[in-house]
Image 1 (cartoon, helix red, strand yellow):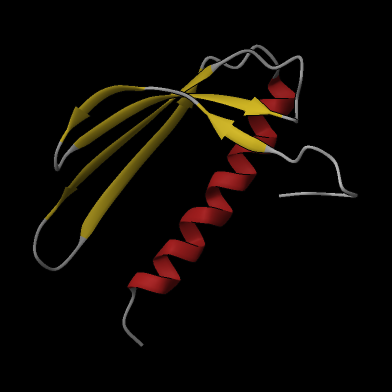
Image 2 (image 1 turned 90 degrees about the horizontal axis):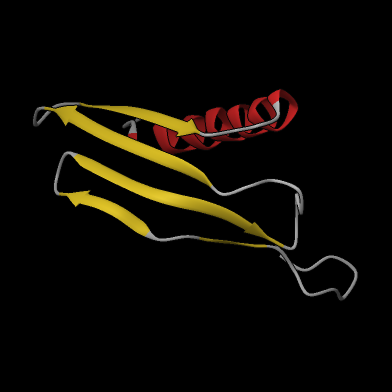
Length: 89
């Protein structure tokens, strides 16, 4: 995302564990935002059946409670959008 013609904001990291179809762990690092935020870890776990899937998401290693809350709010919004997309009308 570019704001005002700047360098933009992106997220980088590395996959730390890939275990299809049940677990994905990766590092999370902001580029162009939150310059004082250290690298964090995202853990996704999927459990389910043919009818439904339970997603457990943990984003760990925050040094700052304010940044943790901002990311929590963002993840909840993203998961709500995903749920709306995947739920039949």
